[in-house]
Image 1 (cartoon, rainbow, N blue to C red):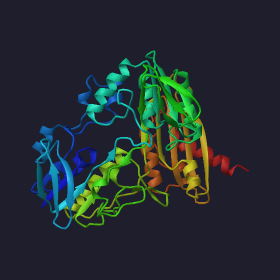
Image 2 (image 1 turned 180 degrees about the vertical axis):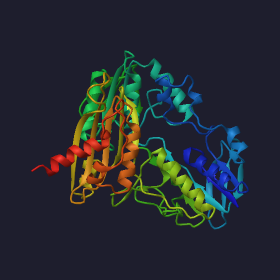
Image 3 (image 1 turned 30 degrees about the vertical axis):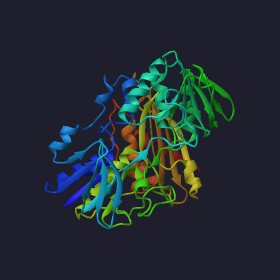
Image 4 (image 1 turned 90 degrees about the horizontal axis):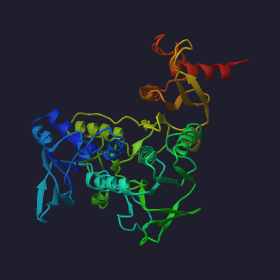
Length: 447
């Protein structure tokens, strides 16, 4: 069997390697329009936080390693045409020569575009986006030289950039059109704690503000015009609005209203010989009535595994996503899974929640660490549908426990009685999750 994969980011690589591991005789051709593969788009933040000494090291696979696995890789190759009737693709190489290839199965791993906006962006010397290695190199250089920086977007990328830039003597502005940072993943109880840390670090937050445009670009310090004010800066990073890159197939495959490619639970498109995965598709969200565009790498690699399995005739279904995330910002670990309380109400789910700050250790220990925890339950059934955590202690693995509990439709009562470990030198007898559920249980049933 001959399989062509378009796109060599996380999803394309996972699909290619899975195909070769399942059946080494499968011919796999991976086509990538850029000159490099496997660069982690948040690598710039890792470099700024000195977790790596070179930006180019932030890769999880080299071309040589991929080739050694038996994958044929074409870089600097842009696919211009797909002919589903003939089962061929036409691509153009770096010298503008065109070539045609046939396939038995085609996998679309085209991902998402670099951030899209309705704004007309001026020269990238002033206002820019970043995702791949070359653009990240340019942005890193600009950030080092700039004195006043505006970051547009209060999602993970924007907040992580603020954290990486703090304490450098630069004036930093974070502009977010919503009423809180990380609003897609956190309710106000925890997002307000993060906002407090951001402000204490010296970053200026602009919530409920949208960027309207830029002026005075010929000056060293130009103006970013928001709905509320004018901000003087010498550099702006746009960190919002990633969009699925489905242009190549929009004329012959079924698309969703948000521009993603429509797939079934096996990652098969409306053409049975074409599969799609990663950021170019929408995902079924547990406890939601709709599929959503959720550009998270953990969704990408899972969908790629499912696609590869089904391409080779091994039936496998994609499980729902809880959009589980975690990060470390401003000396705190932050993690979330499932629906926020606000999202649940938007879905029409009648919910109740608890927000607590609990000690991790027993009181006799010198080390004392706290965890802020929010749990969201469906009323009536008491089924867990969302969880959020924040602590200076690394509690990120606990979010995986909560994700699993949501997936298994675990109830409040079951959380209280679940078998979690206890060690008198490490934690409380019930653990953070069990203790939070227990406190809510007492609150609910107290006479």
